[in-house]
Amino acid sequence: MFDRIASEYDRFNSWASFGLHKGWRDIMVRQIPAGASGLDIATGTGDVAFLARSQGHEVVGLDFSESMIHRARLKDIRSAITWMTGSAEALPFPERRFDCITSAFALRNMRGCLEAVFRETFRVLTSGGLALHLDFGRPRFPVMRWGHRLHTRVSVPLIGRLVYRGRWPQGYLENTIRDFFEPSQVEDRLEAAGFINVSHAPLLGGVVQLYRGTKAC
Ligand SMILES: C[S@@+](CC[C@H](N)C(=O)[O-])C[C@H]1O[C@@H](n2cnc3c(N)ncnc32)[C@H](O)[C@@H]1O
Image 1: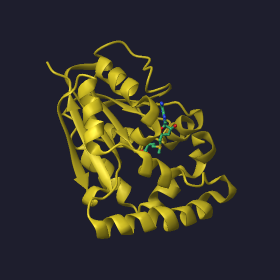
Image 2: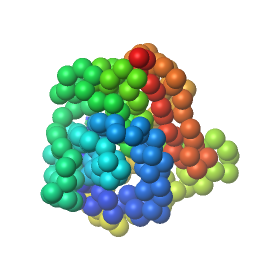
Image 3: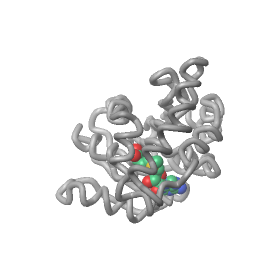
Image 4: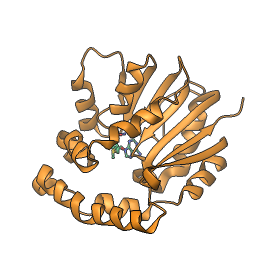
């Protein structure tokens, strides 16, 4: 599916989030400790990786979709970012390789292997390393919940069909948001993988959640 939607992915993101996705990514990237070497898992077309690189971090962007990685690479072929294809649940790196792990809008897609993904990211983090994960959630307050449902059920499919025409994966966004864990269940899984100081912060009333966890020194 991701190979099929890679070519229009950035345009779809901007339209469907009314441009807000940039600010959400920025909030996460600003939390990466200075001088950290980072791994952005499920990097897609690389927006988080580019943002982290622009702030001076060494960055590896990894995704299992060759088309997504191809798009990321083409955005700036001179960039110092290392692009790799690979699965987040079987990371091709030695233990304690990175100071920070990031992911954006990816956890929902890894619902079935989230435990393995958290175990792997924990393994490749240095002691004291930080994991940051940004993803859509379900707003808590009724009015926001209603508006959000309307957006994901009506406007998003409309935008999807406009941007992708026949290639739009009908129901993808709505279903993955609906079926994803509650924030506390994500936190439980981070803790089960070994992370400490685990937390989540709702952005825009819970439309997006930013998860944090630290690997103990
Ligand atoms: C919704 S996109 C998010 C892309 C990017 N992080 C962003 O912020 O726009 C989800 C990405 O996760 C990747 N992905 C899903 N499951 C994966 C896995 N198990 N390992 C690696 N990449 C995965 C997909 O190929 C896709 O590029």
